[in-house]
Length: 297
Image 1: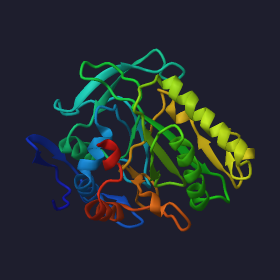
Image 2: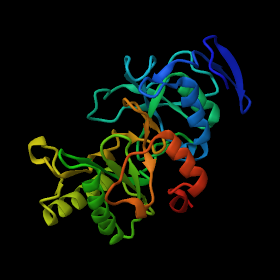
Image 3: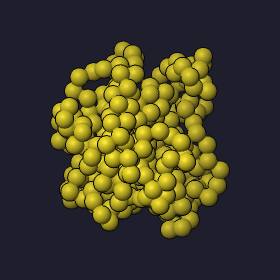
């Protein structure tokens, strides 16, 4: 697909997708264009679609690229193709949208990924729960703990803490996959073999975070106060609230340089750990497979 200023309509899996401004530079630091963003989404689509399956998608859109305006979008936009699945869900209590109904898109196939790529939706955020075949909100199917380093701590400290968290979760027979966030830290995702309510999962994650903070006070903190976080790693357990979302594994990030929320293998979680760009992720996915594969199976 060659970049072009003029709109064009392409067939993607039997769906007609309108593409515009494919030569628009989305990441000026490396001259990465919208066409290249869509190419990345296409190459990782099997793995990315597994993460998105049956989850409502909140997007962060960058219509003019990462140096321009950006905005969150929960509702499906006017003019979206009628073949993009959508569902109206009540906003979770305690959020800015409480009392409202929100109509989210669900990205089921490659055509939907190409569509959001053309929309400039670089970041795709999803909750820890899915929607069932009859439209009901299910209990969460995964737990997430977000590791957020407080300067001067960085990814090396996150790697140390990630192993501590993984060892603690293993005591409860939970295996997790590390995902470098494409920003400062990383997330750990653990599939849940037994369904619990979102608030039970959130409480469990909170208990684990407090336990590790008490056992490793020089390295780990479990409270959000910034004055306590210098040189330590925050274990953010709150992302398990049903109203919260996290960056979807394999999504791009809207930073100066293109980076990806990249699933990793445990043998690389150690000193010298670095965030990955889209070319790295595509190459690893082809050569090594998806780290989520065994747990998904």
